[in-house]
Image (tube, rainbow, N blue to C red; front, side, top):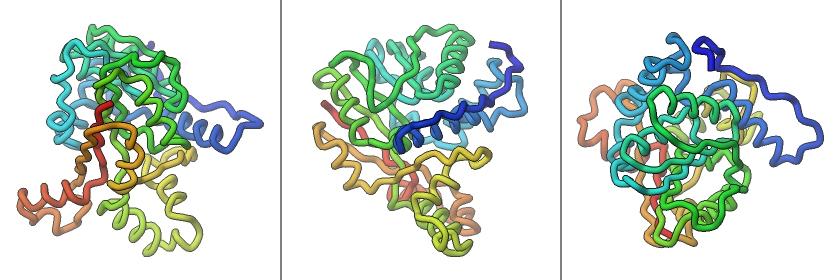
Length: 285
């Protein structure tokens, strides 16, 4: 992969696809045009170690410093880990660094290409392939850990994708999945109030359509499907699993305006754990 290769690949138009197929193609177009985290390193030479370091540092030190402690990448040494929706490979690399045997799958060919290159840059091994979360190609009970962060709320049949997670996990295996949280300050403040009420978006579009327009980086016209769930809805999605744990997090002080700069840290963390934008589901098969 050339170091100065462009991040953007246009998705070819496909005729005669179903509604669900169209939604998946829009997600692919979004991923091709803006790979996960790539906007952070847009001023750096693409594909270099410096480029990938910038994406990683922003993810765990600026955007979501809670992630390493909640996901506990180091717990899975020697385990077979599947990531569905590997993006640019940031999280999958953390599992590999901690001794897991990793497999990355993504619906976007560009993401698979970038992740494979990233592993080469850092000298780690893994298996990578193009795949659909709703129809995984792996045999039953192939993995010890199923990981998917911020992906399954973009696929039309999320319930089927969760069933696939259950199928490919070994008995006692763990699913770790992040879904967007509908009972969050971002949903009600940033989407419904700001774009829906103040800017009048709800006069023209549904809340779901507003999320497709504004949640992901809106620099393409892809408008991928975006869904959000309450804790109860997420728990129902994983009802075939046992020991279902749900953690809420992901709130940034900027989202609270002026008040965000004045709230004490302990109160801010309590708000994040109650009304954050991410639902992290951990469930055992």
